[in-house]
Length: 173
Image 1 (spheres, one colour):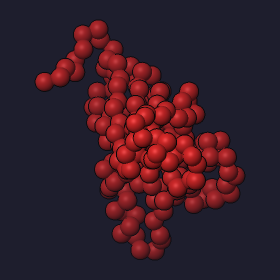
Image 2 (cartoon, one colour):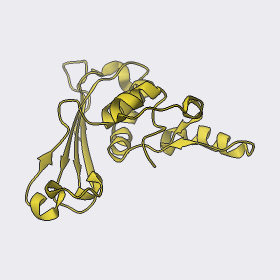
Image 3 (spheres, helix red, strand yellow):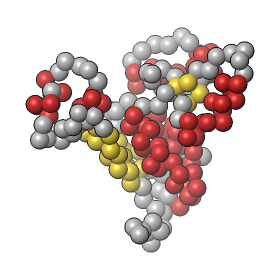
Image 4 (spheres, helix red, strand yellow):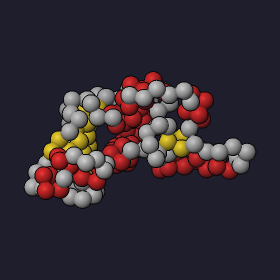
């Protein structure tokens, strides 16, 4: 349930998670575990009983962001400015883990909204860029702004991407 097998490139993992890895072969066999997009691959590997299936479980912000944007990127990437993707994420305090830090106490977070890891520092950025670039079949660049909000658990992402045409094709109905 860690980030260990989310990346095809171990060097990306090492750079973002600060840990050296030697399990290159295992990493190459891992499947990105977002079943909505890799169901067939996961099923086929699971049916081959001669070997185990190693699944890289996607992160929470990553799952919500991919489910929101992937259909648009898959079916209309030619009409999108793929370097304009903005993801505004809000997470309850349980999303920050179980660290004993004053800033994560509900009484400190209550009635506030606290951004963190801004400026391209959040660990989910390379995971999102990898998946979005794969599905759009072109490089995608993102700005990701995560926030802690005063609720025990839950997650909300709002995603934005500019269209190439000046006339906005995606209007609210």
